[in-house]
Figure 1 (cartoon, rainbow, N blue to C red):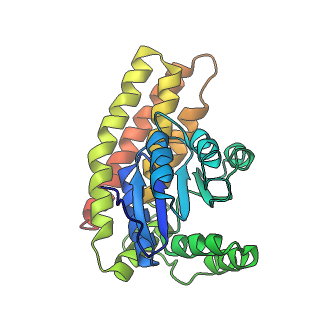
Figure 2: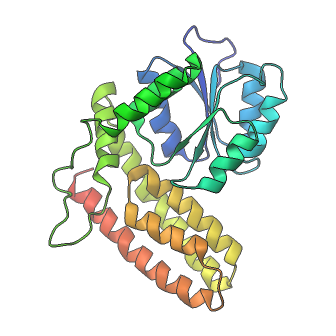
Figure 3: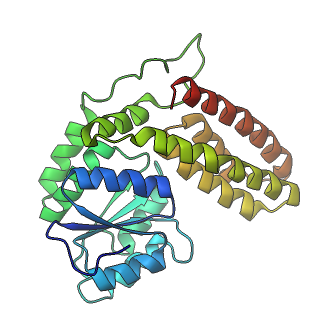
Length: 274
């Protein structure tokens, strides 16, 4: 529930329709000394900004009801919104989305999967409006010694690992920093929510609805980015880009591979005793 009185800590508003993302972002920002409020879509984000006047806003680009672009534009028109730092969250290497984010007034952007250890620092530096410090922390991020392979998830016999080791290690390090069982929570949510999305993709393929196929593929990609299931992310990208003649046959093949890969990811999580 949102507070009616602003905390003495700097207040960050996180707007994303994915519960796992909000959960991880909350823990990362609270670790860095922020008070945190959450919104599940763009409309709620605009309403929360108007009432709470947060110090910084994190907006996912694609949300239901009102997307991040529209929410950013709406916030910019509100009292106090013109100069509010807005960090837009987008998919990896999505140049078009990044360009549009700046066009609608974003202060900066960050791509998924997120480095949770650096998020609080990135947000703090945005509040100081010091671009030199932002660049310095980006450089530190690239050389960060936290990013080591996770035991038990190496490539075996030439087989691609089920996860990007850096993504899971990043979550595990955050877990150690805040003293909470974060990764099991994230993994459990992922395993509970993913089968329904895969079924939705399958149903959309059966109905021949290309727009729905692409929409569900984006949803699944967003969830898979959080946990670092890179092969699933790649398959989702393939589904999002399928639009040629005979796309249904291609989509069916990708979906079958996606189902098999999800089972591999599921087993890998279970083998890690998550």
